[in-house]
Each structure stands twice: as C-alpha cells, then as structure tokens.
Image (cartoon, rainbow, N blue to C red; front, side):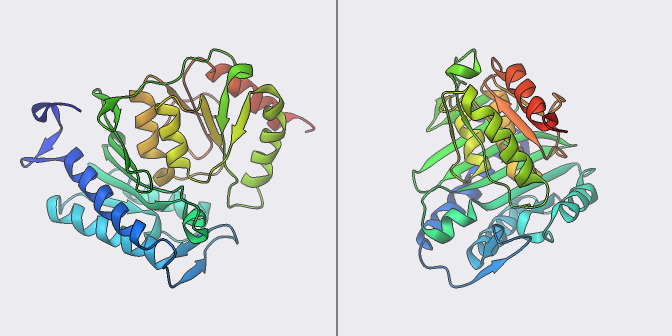
Length: 285
C-alpha cells in the first residue's frame, strides 16, 4: 500500500487508515453474528432485508468515524428510508458536503441471513462529491480491498489490475437481482437474458460491492446492475477505476454518486457491454 506520507490526511489522521479500521472492526463483529441474528425485517420488498446486525454495524462505523472526524457528513444505508425515491433524496441532502462518508454496513444482507458466506462492508469517502477513498472488506475470506484516488488499488497488500479480456465472448460477467420488483428487476432480467448467450458465463452472488471488487481484481471482466445506490457503488467504483477499469452509467456517462444503473468493466469490453445492455433495453419496445 502507499507509504504513510502519501495517504490523505486531515488533522494528522489518515482517512484511509480510519476507513480500514472501521471496515475491519465491523466485519469481524458481523462474522461473529453469522447464524446468530435475532431480528429480521422487510424494507422495500421481500428481497430487501435488514437485521439488527446491519444497524449495529452501521452505528459502530458511524461512531468510529465521528470520533476521528466529527465534522464530516455521513450517509449510511440503514439511516435512509426504503425505496429509490428516499435514497435519491438522502443523497441529495448531503451531496454538497465537503467530506462525506458513504457506508453499506452489510452489503449482501440476504446472504448473511441465510448463512451464505458472501457479503461485505463497503466504506467510501467523497471529497466535494468525488470518491477519494474506497474500502470493501470481505470478513469471511479476510480480504480487504483498498483504493485511494491516484494511488492505485490493493488486495491483501498487493496491487490490483483488471482482467485482460477484449471481447464479451471471452468474458466472465457478474450481475445481481435487484430488490425493486416493478422496474429494476424486470429490466435486469431482460438484460441478463440478452447478455448470457454472448459471454462465457454470468455470476450473481449477491453483493454489488464485492462484484465491483472482483472486477477490480480481475476475477470477473465486468459487472452491471440496475437500481443500485451510492452506498452499494461508491467504494467499488474507486477500486475499479484505480485498477485500470471503467465505471459508467448504462448510457456511458462517467460514474458519479447519483448513478443507479451501473456498468463496470476492465475497460476493454466496456463499449460492447453497453451496446448489448442498450439493445436489450430497447428490444421489444
């Protein structure tokens, strides 16, 4: 990782070190709760779940961040009402903050609830709307993915790079099944049906942040999903970009915190993936 002198600092404390510490502490606590959560609530849909572990992990992270940076703003998934409109409104209320921490305490709650060991802690820090630190931690594999703007991205302390595939037909992609049953899920399924025959295969393992981290580390060639939020994408987007990849919306516009329909790739297959997604969206209309 970067030498200490290169890490962004404020008041003598490293942003990245605090993000790593928060992710590691929350992740280790979450791991101890696997199979032991006591409450389960449905939020926006039957696929959108929350437990006391999500809420507890977010509170832990918020308190740790607040200890070091009490004047920074904070956007966490569990502090926002369910649904896309509430998410957009919550982001709008803090998007002008100088420093904004963007947190998904358990990305992959459905997996966590079922004991499927694929979930992560996602923590990003944006400075005036641009993500400058991104951390995704997988506590079950003890894999820490870290990126700093302009400094590269790392996993287990080793520099990451995106994969080398140059065509969809040679690519392993990832996607998800959105919680919104009215718009996002039907569209994502339409795209999946169109893209699956064009690629080597598609994986869907239920954590957008880890999917993005896997793009960054070259484990998958690309990822797309409809209807995500800032806390799903912010850290992962920086990981991908700092690993040499590309992140846009589905029209090819550069990633920003308001993007909900995302495409993230190694860069080489990006235009081909966007074209396939756009063709799937317009097919039959």
